Image (tube, rainbow, N blue to C red; front, side, top):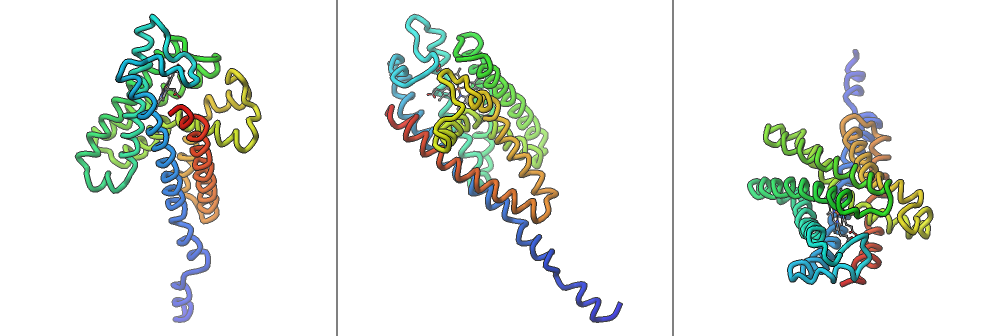
Length: 279
Ligand code: HEM
């Protein structure tokens, strides 16, 4: 090889430059998406604290029914009311703990705190999933069978992902733990994604496919889509980060920016329509 050939083979090609540029875009877009999730879940947390905490902790359970619920408070049903009360109190704990876990600055600077919040998160996830299954199948809080099966599917995914993420942390397999902890966060957030999904879709289509008793095609799609769509996006992100070429990385970036913007719109809608009117 001549000297000039050797020098030119060391020059970065336009393909190399494009690959290097594309390398970090999905991670930046994922940060944007998480920023929007953080914002939207803070609003959910505010609603739970402001609406459910005063009524539940003071024993004014009938106040729950001032917002539309499937079952909510039922006179004489102390066990059912207790189950619902515990569920909404735990909902704030898991939402708050989840947000603390995904902020990298907290994770990196306060590892002991991260571990304790992590344990609280996984125990609360299991209690919420088991309690939620009880509310559906024993208390009968569901509008239709597809919805009941969809939310139970989500409860089962929570139990599976949380248990495995915890197991991996105990085995000190941290790279795998991180992936499974993100999967757990995704499926735990499904009930929140559902609310955001309804609002974003409602704003975009005027409510096409939404039935009066959550029995329209969009309701059936979202009953499972609330877990599966965010999981699919996350798995695609993992795959693209590992093996994707420049085009795949740009496409992933565009998808994540679209998701982030939809989450922002859905969160604003949920605050304006589902939560703030009841505070
Ligand atoms: C893990 C995260 C979860 C959170 C943060 C959460 C949060 C909530 C909240 C805030 C409510 C009150 C309803 C409202 O004001 O919108 C609620 C109700 C309910 N949740 Fe969950 N939940 C979770 C998981 C689950 C799971 C996995 C199931 C079922 C397997 C479930 C089943 C129910 C049921 C049946 C109700 C009662 C609905 C009613 O009576 O109207 N939840 N949840």
